[in-house]
Length: 415
Image 1 (tube, rainbow, N blue to C red):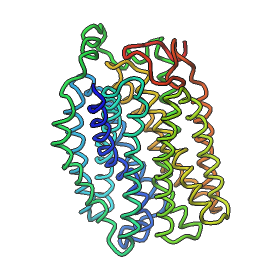
Image 2 (cartoon, rainbow, N blue to C red):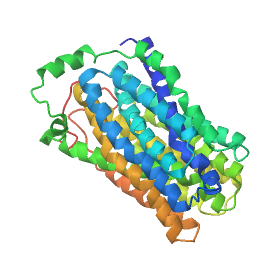
Image 3 (spheres, rainbow, N blue to C red):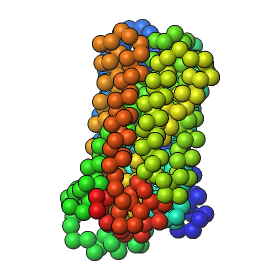
Image 4 (cartoon, helix red, strand yellow):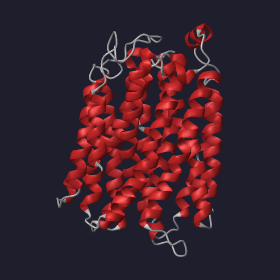
């Protein structure tokens, strides 16, 4: 695809993932308001459960969309995912009971799970190999932009407005449906279709687990798990944790905004390094920065230092997961890219399920306010170790290369 096509794909991908990011961080933004909502009796454990319920639907969407995207093209599954997401966000905005609200969060998660593998594959296929990391990374910053919008709206509207209002903005995906239908190709690129026709196996999960792919696939799954523990734990709990440490709601949402600004700037800086052959080093460093940032947030520091630490935490959590997604898209050949991304995010979404409840449990079990921040350090350090275990392919490798690997290369990461 020509450069203009790559830019169009990147812009559309950024817009679609902005929607995902908005919903990713909306529960964190409304968390303090939910705890005070009359009649629902929401506790800190309930808040963690709501975050986990949202994440519980995501593996279903990720796996199904990745598989369908490889078989039928990216367009139709993306349209279905956006429409589904709009419907359930609308229902969340009118939910009158906690039980129905929880059900809408689970259903919303199915739509959210579908978008990242589809968008990542679509943008990756639209870009030239030498610029693929930059285009995919730029599109993935949409997640953080969505979080910034959530934080800004929450700061402006809450607590004066009812928290349901923020979910009403979730109908915006419907605006993008005709754009997706026009811009996204109905079928895979010609090279992917030719490889697809030559494939003798219909078992796509089996193909990404064959000996030459197995080590890379399992490491991708594990790294995604730890990354999503950080992302969804922080997305659900960061504003509430800052309130527990003495800040008011408006101030705590400023930390959430800084978190997402850091994710945007950090991702863009990291993909520049990736295009120069340092994706693996950037991923390891970002995980470690997440641990350092959370330790800093647990200590009494001047406000500017804490806001900067929040920004670094954004790079270390959401930015790092963006890097892992780029590595997955870079590693698999085109006819397996959607499946590889779908299963990586699908299996890894267990981390998204565990993250909010894990932080909720720590918050309940330990009255020491710093304990919740230190709970982030464990998955961050583990993620750094997993990223460091990736090895090069026959050329540059999924985490070491500059994105110039041939489209249909299938050399294993563990070679």
